[in-house]
Amino acid sequence: MKHLLAPLCAALVVCAAAFVPAIAQDKAAAPRTLKVKLNYTGTGTVDDKHHIFVFLFDSPGFVRGEGMPIGSQSATSKDAVVTFSDTGKSPVYVATVYDPTGGYDGQSGPPPAGSSLGMYSKNPGDPAAIDIEAGKSADVQVTFDDTSKMQ
Image (cartoon, rainbow, N blue to C red; front, side, top):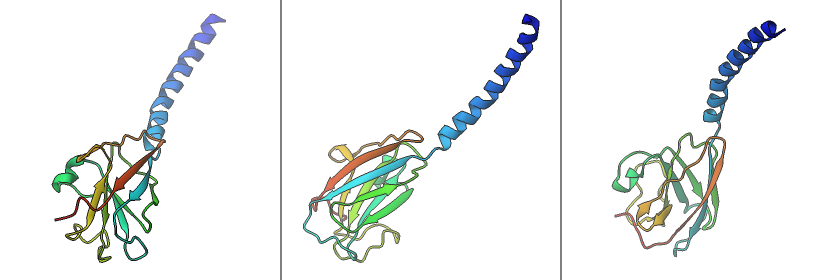
């Protein structure tokens, strides 16, 4: 009987090993969700014409003007929540822009001069990385006002 179980055990080990990469691949392909709670305390009116734009970056270099956003959403209230349903990468970084003129669409280049800026940060002025495991979600809050503006 022992000699009959040995090939079966070996076959099960080979089958199990074949499924490990598939399981790992499924986990890596699982979406990463990010919810950003906005808290704009500036004086500007946020509405259907005056949006807050939330940009997602895969590098903190955006503070030096390096890199392009990997995602964006907009909000029409000062305390909205925007959701990125599949960031695709981790870590990510969040920047916010409020244009008081209502002329910025979030896609036609950098924000205009005078736009209020914010970012997810644990230390003022330093973008903080947001780590999101595959298949998981993360919630962050970004509070900003009119102190920092686009030049």
